[in-house]
Image (cartoon, rainbow, N blue to C red; front, side, top):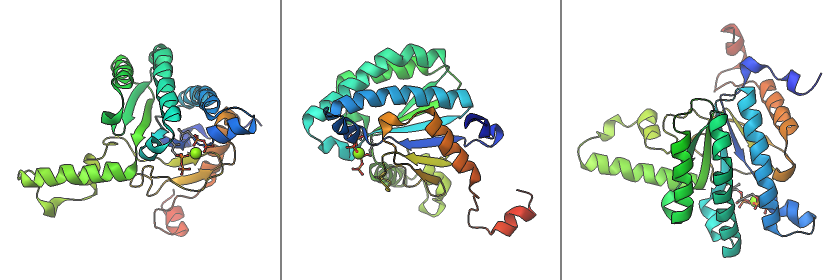
Length: 250
Ligand code: IPE
Ligand code: IPE
Ligand code: MG
């Protein structure tokens, strides 16, 4: 049976998040510069977006650039930003044709006017789509997001609009950039690194984690199928016992 046929389509994760890692190493292995790897990584992005939408995944979050990535050599940061603009300009039509809504999470005020302009255009063009939601984490880190949430809540308290006694998970979530987006059931990280790197720390509380040695430019649809098959073998207990889950017919 093909890998694709082994996926149980009515038990797909609603939301898949991916830490796309390994572009630099992929390029260096081929004797090329790191930016060559980033350019190749865009082809993988395209394939994974198309495959996810085709399967019926509702939310796909891609970690494209972290707060910490601003500390890379400026030539690399600049090349990544240019690649972002180029990809947005090239792909907007296809996103719309595939009915994909784009959302961005992150500190976009740090992006240049040029990048923001391209982003705004694609955000606007895809805003009426109602198929898969593609969330790009750009200039994003979870600590930035949580500190911002705390700050915004503190202002509301000062204005008398929130009573501290009422703050719970739901209120806190409303102040995160992922407001109204369900938590990812599955997190994939490529390139063999076994860490979260400041990504969705709150939202991943109960996600299934899947790590693969494959470098991002080599990650293809078959690799996504493998991750989904592995996810479907996991028992998601949320603190309960296995017996409890079976008693309830889950
Ligand atoms: C991931 O690949 C892309 C970004 C973080 C922007 P890397 O650039 O981190 O590649 P490695 O980890 O150095 O191989
Ligand atoms: C994580 O990759 C960020 C993105 C994929 C955008 P990094 O390559 O920056 O992560 P670390 O620094 O190795 O943990
Ligand atoms: Mg890396």
